[in-house]
Length: 317
Image (cartoon, rainbow, N blue to C red; front, top):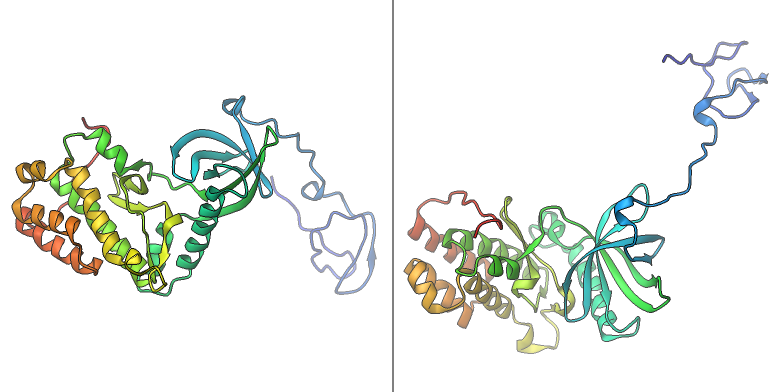
């Protein structure tokens, strides 16, 4: 359909789009009346949002200006229950919604508030690699009091859902009880050490590097860290508890688990140099995550040759 542009009948100047019946030409200042109705300027009656059929009967909560449908429970952490949720609106988005146990004044709510603040500070980091690594952090959507259907008091935070990052390394261990291939463990640990390098350079330690806090993207071979409620400013007054070496040792222990779970199994399936590195770091880690990453690169090259893409799937037995 072609639309003819309106022109002033006195000076032929183009007229701006308007939904009114009269206006003044801004070029010749003639008053123009009986302008035609413009279909794109008329108010449109939008029917009330009835919700999606697949969301009927599912619980809903309100947070900030929006209401969310709780679609699936993802996990139960120390401080909160974690859900996959979707904004209950025509223009929707999926979020990860954490609901603190015990209400707005509980320890769970305080932990979620700490996590929110830490992520805010990390997002503003000026350390090398921040443009990349800050995008791997949970991206904030909203926080505050939850409006529950039953009228209960609760506190929650919502982060954007990241497509593809669905499986924890705890889930990987369950799906592969005999352990993943050593080449797969190499890229998993490498991604973890790279992120920890940036976190430590930004002035923080994670403080809770565990399998359930490591989320893997099998096809893009990425690993991101979640569970930031125990993160600490590494230069604070916590002393040895905030050492970067604790994060690195914890990451090595996670890799021991995904490789099979104990030193004996590592010795039987993992090349000797790689097994020694993982076990040594699990016991007494170096304080520099990047240096450990470089040692990992050398051990992997000695064991497997040049780096190569190693497929990994959660569908494997």
